[in-house]
Amino acid sequence: MIAQVASVSMDADVLVIGSGAGGATTAAVLAEAGLDVLIVEEGAWVEQGSVTPFSLDQMDRQYRSGGVTVALGLPSIAYTEGRCAGGGTEVNSGLYWRPPGELLERWQHDFRIDDFDPDEVLSICDEVETEINVRAVPGPFTAPSEMLRRGAAALQWQHAEVPRWMTYPHGNDPTKGERQSMTRTYLPRAVAAGARLVVGCRIDRLEVAAGRATRAATTLSDGRTGSITFRHVFVCGGAIQSPALLQRSGVHGRIGRTLAVHPTVKLAARFADELNVPDDVPVLQVKEFAPHLSFGGSASNPGLIALSLLDQWPTFRRAITDWQRMSVYYAAITSEGGGRVRSVPNMRDPIVTYRLTHRDRELLRSGLARLALLMLEAGAEEVFPSFRGAPAVRTRRDLADMQDAFRATRATVMTVHLCSTVPMGGVEARCGTDSFGLVRGCRNIFVNDASLLPTAPGVNPQASVMAFAIRNARRFAATGGSHG
Amino acid sequence: MLALRTGAHPFSRHLTATMPMPMRPVPALPVVGSFARRLLAEDLPDLPAARRREAVTFVARRVDTLPSFTRFGVLAIGLLFRTLIAVPGGWSGAAVLMRLPLPFVGEYPRLIRSLAFAYVWEHWPATTSTGACA
Image (cartoon, rainbow over all chains, first blue to last red):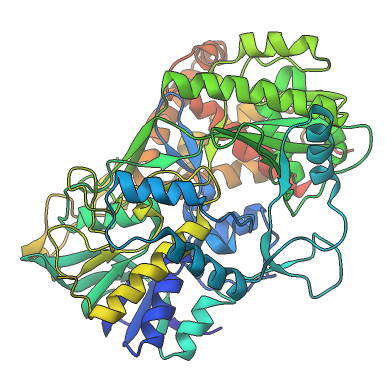
């Protein structure tokens, strides 16, 4: 373990709050530029391989609030946040999508991001892909992936393998990869360059006066309180915690008002033969209707299969004993709705809300129906949609009934992609930071994580987050934090 | 009752209205326990008592770790259900309440059920649909 235990009093030239995709890359760039960097992580260091992926044990040890976090709304949307060294990169599916070039151009144009060259961002993606070993799985797909491929092929829908940032040191078994998460890549790089990483240390708030932050109030995992002094601070706690910390510190403006997510609805599909892979997810995604609608596979251990059936338990319960012949799949949409993150006096955690639009609800409805069709074409004997009042789907004729019964308010809606709560750019009315992550109205507080993405990218955002963070950290290193 | 822990803080002169002040936790088990036990008895009538106890303990532990506002809401709704099922015939009323399309109230049984089911099938994957050991 390269992490240290936090102490009551610490100091640094640059404080980096959070050690996930944004924080780890920021710290590596700045430490390698010769700066004195302290990375502070609220969660623990959990050695990769010491927990079963997607298990309740992992939720306890590596997720915030045991993985039970929700954006309130009609319907409420369940989401998850990593809370450990490496952040979300330790717990997510390890799938990698570059930000599409046209999306980068749209962000640049719509948000007037200065000195933003899409080619430069994609060039940084090249570096990232080498560092974290982005590659296709060796050998054949797992059976749940193969079902997606088979269904898409039958319908002649576009589909593709999504590469992962994995190594496969134990041969060609696609389920035995070792994720090249931040604890394996950028955090060791940062520490090798002189950065210090401390775990078990929550930043309660920043002391801000006249636009300058100088100290952070901390609570250590043993309950002691303390403080950290610094010259510059990078807030990289993710799209929920970063705006919440800024608000708790009295920094407002365009902070936390524009939460964007990719809402998903799910179903469980039962096939004739055993196919369940309890501790991995499919790498194949169906992109026929992208970017508005995408299909893929979810973690499917027996507990998660049970979850997928519980909305209609009286009639779906019979399927649970067949969990080895079942897998869970999702339909994800790009939402036109929006959400907010609000810190509330006397509350430790922020309130998160999200509102789906009518178009979003209809897209979830049609998405779930298309996903059910995809599964039938893949050979599913029966499909169990996850919403109250759902009928089981056995043939194409059942799809209309399913669509009629669907209400978004009855569905289990989830998301794992949260972003855009402090968007960056030159449009003051829309952007919480300037074009390099400097918080408006502040002189030394930067945000450098998923919060900065101007909108939800329509694909897994990790590559975008890492590329933005590296770009901004390089700019900081080159200018000494002065953008003027 | 929910109580606030107060005290001087080194940065108190700079505190804004959004100062985080941790709440003293109210244990969830007394609030959600009876409802969770009853719900599991209805959904999984053959689940052995020891497993049911274990699952209910897990549910309460997870509710204890919810984000503060969510936890407050869950405990408030949990109190409503606990009160309801404590009176004779109250479970029928609770069942009606669960079926109504009420925002947030309807999500409480879903939360309890999802935590319990995830625990049961992760720990004992051979459990049948009635909760019996296969």
